[in-house]
Image: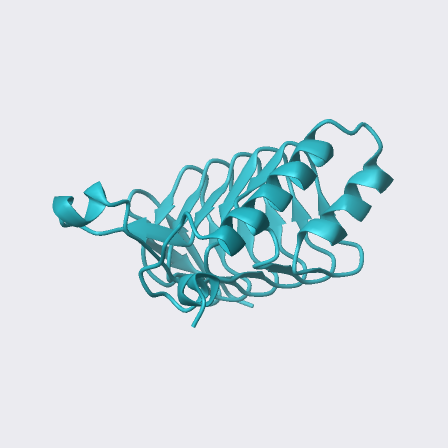
Length: 183
């Protein structure tokens, strides 16, 4: 199993591995182009080159940052506003008709609670899933291993550490269910 495969499957991996560094360097090149381009059509073409998939009528606004890019899957008719940062060591899947406000951060990566392991920069990654028709408010942080259920709303400045049920509004630090939505 390659270090890249270990990373995607949630195992400890060597972040300095040649393949991982090449994918990361490619993402840096493409995000730099995205963030310095004034032509929205060119930005969308660069996003197609960067990401694993971006659906029809989905749109990313600059600045946009990610670590690898190709582990990000975006459905159709979704909008990612400026200042979004995605650490995509594991797959980050964003559904259809998703709205992501400015300065949202999605972190599939984490480190050990054991300080000795952190000294070696041990990292492990778990996927993030944002299901269809979700609205993520500004400055939200979504941590690894979390699924945001369909049609839910995450209030601005929330920190999401656990799964969000479908058809709910969550908010706070850590985010908790505020109310259920009647669909």
